[in-house]
Image 1 (cartoon, rainbow over the protein chains, first blue to last red):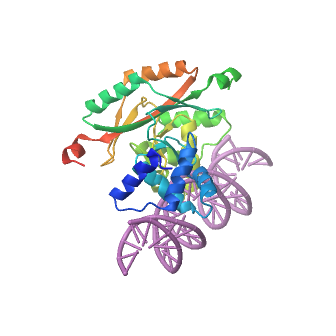
Image 2: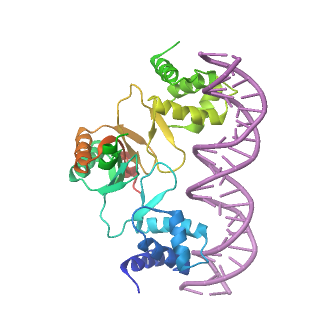
Image 3: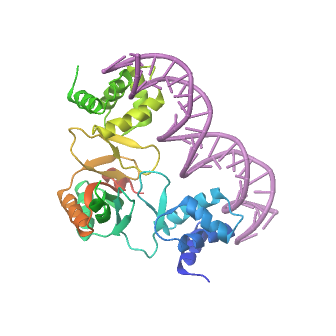
Length: 146
Length: 146
DNA sequence: GTCCATGCAAATCGTTTGCATATAA
DNA sequence: TTATATGCAAACGATTTGCATGGAC
């Protein structure tokens, strides 16, 4: 059952003379099934359930491909493994992270977005994108004290 | 010649019963001599010029110490090695990076800073800090076209 | 049949750790 | 003297790569 993500990936591949393979379809399907911030490792585990013979390197190669195709984007994180999140038909947002428990809240703030446009203009830059992560203590952790 | 950074580091160490060593002084001196975004590797190279016998592990350990002492802070970066920048007597700022040539411009925007405070409150978070990196093409690269 | 993609294992990169020794207090 | 810090090398986790084989076109 071809969904719009598969269509988009196939179009991207065809355009560049690349192939629609079993492994690539499995990684995309695994990615679509996962929510939130996905590591290559969790993707690997999910993809193996669909195609047990899949290799780890292929997952790394394919998730980069998904990012290039506009289906995934890197989520900002400082420590540990790189994470990806859905990018297609998902609106842009930034992150609020609790330093204590690791909870991540996604938010969108119009004021910040437009202020960023102003900064780009100020410095003569052509905007491509941005990553922002606010860190703090969530209400629960703050209540419990540091 | 003791400067305020050395004073601050020694105070921090004394307070916690830790020692003011030759290696730590060398790393701090090397860090103060470097500008912008410093990797552990470039710090290692600079510190070796001051104290040729210094080990890489010590540099990694010491730069973390500098961050804890408030003399350095991690700069946001997605790829490659972690980078640190001066934090003491340097005001807070965010970064604007050119995707093409890698130029980094530091900026401070009051509107963004206060909008972030609003977001923290909205979600009941106690603010600790944030990292923001805007990416785009700098004026020069944009002129030359992609 | 021709390329491109795959899986594997080895290589690489940045960073951390264990440990015997050296050094600041 | 005694705890902490050091340098080395080995361990580590995440990611990338080389290469012979397999599969899509």
